[in-house]
Length: 285
Image (cartoon, rainbow, N blue to C red; front, side, top):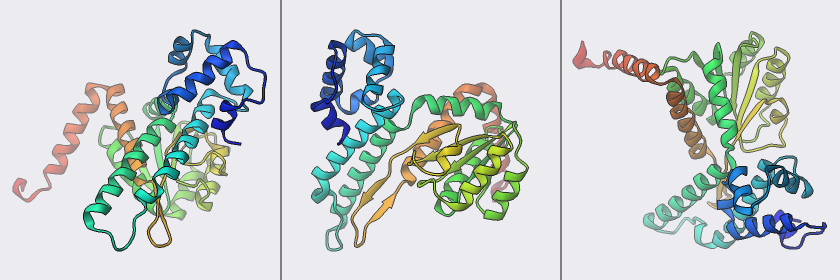
């Protein structure tokens, strides 16, 4: 049974505070999912502990897991309602496809903003700043995303490196240290090379993060920090699923938060690295 159905027809004995929370989540939808525990407790006039206990009554270890479940239910409902509207077919006009794709991407980013877990992003930013080295690992299309992330973060003075070849990933996993941070980009969290790498890095006591859409994957079992994102599916012949836009969104968010955390030093280094790159242009020879 979906969490929305459980809230609508609770099979547990509910208190006055529970009923306030049920009404709050059913009435506010996605807005409630993006609210902090302080905002929820203040709105319902109850304690933080009561909110946490409420989530556990419905089978969720944390409030974050509870809100993600609601967001996924709401997303599924929206998807069901708009399936005919958003399904892309081979005979429609360019303009129609553009509008459908825009709608899908807007939904993808909205869902990612709900699922991402801002506490996890804040913790990851702190770990990046403190790490001796930051390794980004990804295979296939995730490797290109990892490369973009490492290049962007390196340009503000952080020792960030990307490896997308399985041999290189294993090599650098074997020399990871407790002072290093390893960030995996994997939609499914089931890529064999990355799971094996995470097992090695875990034994070597490196800090491990995953940017992923799955919390039930083998990779997730090794992570110290998990940053979640949404994936959109749209029908085109046999179907297509994509998460690149949501991962780019997360990378940009991390990058901006790093600049905010480091301050003027990051801006200065960014200017210096840009100047060095500009020196390669023909006009500067």
